[in-house]
Length: 242
Image (cartoon, rainbow, N blue to C red; front, side, top):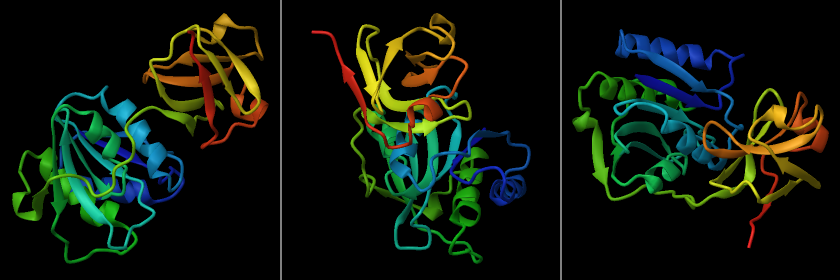
C-alpha cells in the first residue's frame, strides 16, 4: 500500500501526475489518498499530522510524504523506516516526528536521480519511483545511502498550536493525551470538554480528543475557524488540573 500525504490540494494536476507515475512504477499497488490539504509549505504542522495519522496504517505501508517548499534546492531527500512503515520525502523535518517517536528507525539518503528530474516536482520524479520500488518489495539499495539521522529534526513533543483546519472548520492541534478536566482556550475563546459534538448545545464551542488522538477544537454544527477566527499556527493554551 502506498499512502499519499501532501500539500498539493485536489484542484490541480499534481496528485494525478503522482498517481500516474506510481501506476507506471508499481502497477497493482493500492494507492490511498490520506491527505492533500496539509497546510501549504508547513512541514512543521505536517510532521505532527503525519505522526498522528500514520499509526492507523498497517505495517509495511509506504508513505509518500511531500510538503516541500525547498524543492530544487540542496535540501536532502530521504527514505525512513520507522515503526514497521516506510516514509519517503524531503529531509526538511516533515518525517522527523515520526522518526523520533518510533522505537526503531533507519534512515537513508536518496543518492539517485532519474534522467528526467523536474526541479519543481521531486514528488513525481524522485520520491514516487523510490516509494514504488519499496512497495514492490524490491529494495532500492543501490539508490540509497544509509545515514545516522535526518538532517532536520523538529521537537517531537506535543505542539500547542493549531496544525490543521478541516472543511467543517474544526481545528486540529498537536496536543495528545489531554485530560478531560483540563481548561482549553485559543483565539480569545474558552472551549468546554465533550466526548463528541452532541454533548454541547448547537453553536457552542467544545474540545475533544479526536480519532487521530489529537486535541481538536470545534463548534457543534458550526465552524470553530469562523466563530473564533482560528488559523493554522494559533497557540492553544491548556491548563491542566493540579
